[in-house]
Image (cartoon, rainbow, N blue to C red):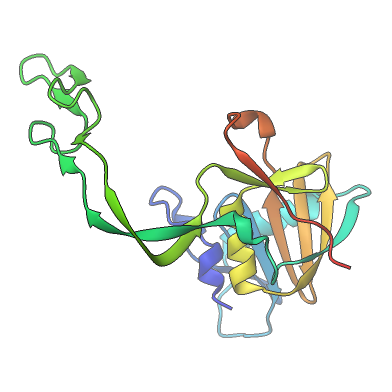
Length: 207
């Protein structure tokens, strides 16, 4: 397992960019998902960041909805094929693909008049050749009566492709997933944040 995949990639969250240790556990988080792993490696120093993440684990209480979820078998329709590009759309020369222009005199920002704020002309042209797959942009995963980012669930599936005990704490809007001596926390999402074109993909309890 690469615990760094649970860390943040944002520059303004420095303490979230690396794993931390408290006692016999290592922690990591990106602010939306967290992991806690039992580890007896005395060479890893203890850090304050671990206490911050551990406090989230300690704050969870209540009677959770409990399910068994197989993270080694995510629904195939979470992903969509990536096709080879034959010809890329043309970048606007005036705004250099940004879609906006900054006035040299007053500093105000406005849509580029040449491309009407799009930044490009035309559309990419694709072949029928599939070169990979990616997570669907407009999708959200439903587990029982709660909703999750497919990107975060894919992190779990890539690092822990096995059956986990899924506990949803509705009061906290958070789920704890237990894999033996490893625990993952993941924030649920509000379905109201998505438009009507968002595909809802259901992840059911394994038998």
